[in-house]
Length: 150
Image: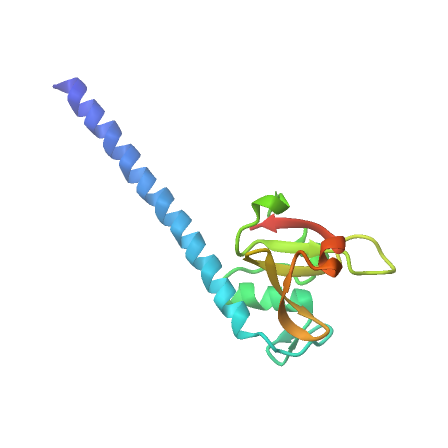
């Protein structure tokens, strides 16, 4: 009887703890889905250097703003954002991951950030405004630096 009670107790603890892990994972997925919804609402917003509002965004201002809308506070610049989170291989990208590029002609390193939305696409603020682009485009493919998961 004692052995059976111990086994039942351990089984309940495992079941109970796995419930919280699953809830946490589903909460994270819901948060990423909401992030992408918020980002897509801003398609067409004009580009503004240093911009952090729906009146105009630069790349990191856009990522900063959309994450703040879902309760995640990030550093303000793409270089600082690149220091956050865990490295993700390009083949393992998931919606909501941050994708970094080197678009600067004068300095090497991270100079642009976008949000991965799935299907090899990112949403970001570029000189034409907030838009969706393919990671396979000749421009973005050659400037890819890496990706991070928060």
